[in-house]
Length: 328
Ligand SMILES: [Zn+2]
Image (tube, rainbow, N blue to C red; front, side, top):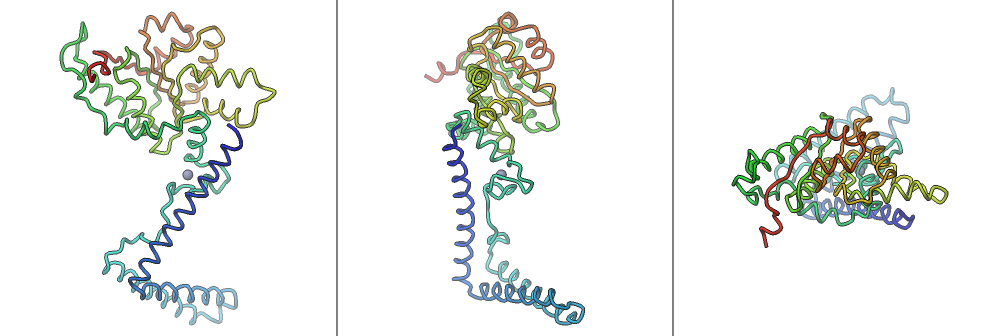
């Protein structure tokens, strides 16, 4: 990612923060105009506060009476103000600044200087060209999922119907999201195209991003490209390029879409194993989606990858008729 992009993100945070401050100011002014007594109270409280801190700096031991009198006055004013809020039906938090992210107050950083989750996710979206993801995620989420698209008639030799199957998959995915911090499992989605795998990946990404998790959603060929850039351009690599690579290992969830469509050789195989293995060893979860059948998957990838996936992933098989044709 170029510095320009980074500056853009920083400016975006500045704008967000200023907007939150401005909006709060506007709300306050509106109330002050309508109910001037509330403004008076706030001013009185502010003045008393200044007086109080002056006394505290002076010799508080000689001013005990004055200090307790001021505190009493402030308390009374607060009671009066709360009473007015209640009477005028103004929400208690109406004057509060409503930041998009209450953790970092839209600064992008925590008090200890670390990046906030929201900022990391924003960087990821920019680094991985996931700018369209917000649009997709608004459209494709658990609430928008329509189980009735799936047929309730038996499909080939399967024991359950595609609809029953999707019910099962949906509840597995919901548990995956709800218990994300507790469970230590990754998921493999396999089956033909147009059966809802991508939709389900979007649902999961959406849910977890909303819960403050960092999510990278990339196709397998893109992931290989990131790895190649890192491996082969080491001398010219910028800090941000390295971050780009490191997030593959560090983000809370890595979604690898379309596994099997990347150019496959021993390099890609060992790099994929490295990502999968490192993430699993450090308890980081993945969702991998592929159009390949399991036997084809087993031939395509090294035994090390396959044994990790087959033994440790929750495997969801998507079957039925291609929904994209159904809706045409
Ligand atoms: Zn934040």
